[in-house]
Length: 462
Image 1 (tube, rainbow, N blue to C red):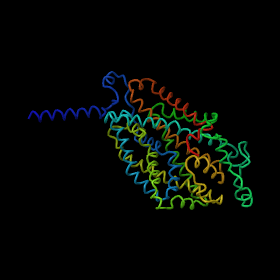
Image 2: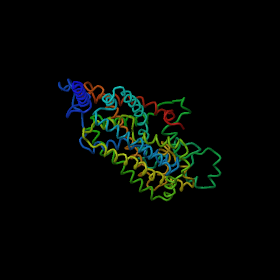
Image 3: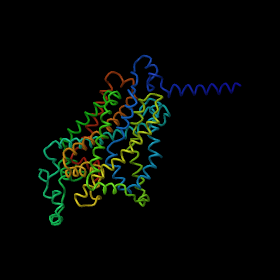
Image 4: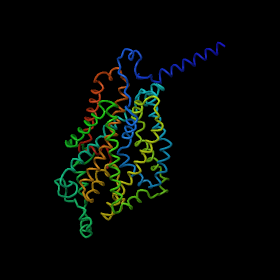
């Protein structure tokens, strides 16, 4: 009998421990000491104002540039429709479960990406620190892409797009416009030289001024440095007041890109040659499934596009109410994420099909990934459309908002994780705002190395 009573007491102690440690009490922040809360030293932890704030923040966080410029290219490169087989295997076997796990972990503990692990098992805290290191590096270089996009957007407000003709100061004698390429006689006569297009020279010689190699970092590109500063300032004001401000900003930044994507999709599928581009995008080549690289690409795309293992989803989930049904929303958001990637392929490859038909070349010759798609292929395509300035402006606005969402959500996740480590210090007064400003400014200074003439070589291999 005594042994039975002792076991019951141990079981009750264990239940009380889990109740006090893991489950947050109403109105309290579980990451703080009880004596601090009793004395009112630490402000209460914020919560989302509404369910839609959380949904749009998560949607904005993981629906980003990778959905628009990476997934369509990987799909074409790795067997078209056949690529969807490993993609969905990794989606249901890893992407969705880990995504739900991270959101649920944050919601259950009401803690950020580091301290949540301390609540579950202290020895796992290193996972949180590792994720913060990764997201810190990601935040430094990812925003550089937005600086490029802002520069392109500003260049659109001219009587003529500066990458449309070979008459700019940065153009070389090897620059050839599409009118010459269409003329077979002139093209064959000139094809013995190393010819380039005006859009390629605008990107490489004006925007980036690429140096001779990665060992030659070159001078700072001040125009890009100012664009980088502007984007960091916008990012700061999106998150400086916590989820109360972030939850309202995403009503525009998370929804408007979808409107732009639909507009560009409708425009793309109505262009001549669009059907050939879509066939090229989805034509299944099952033999590619024997290549391990196809499976690696599918796995990396899932983990990158769902922003998992970065701590951001855990931080966003930590602002949910304890009994919120995050399972339902995670399934819906997963469908939105993968659906956006799939639809983006139609918008992109319909335009590439039109571009290939206009130039009289194969689609494989114009299909690119990453910066090549966003800053060479698509800008070149819009010069062939009626009202090119309008379509260029819409495209780069969509690009900026897609990237900006992902950027400030990842920074918010980074901030939340660090603030939860020192809540009694960083939640007082304006200390959190000052800390965010210092972090953004430090990240900006570190990012300046990537807007030098050799910066692009450190980001992507040519």
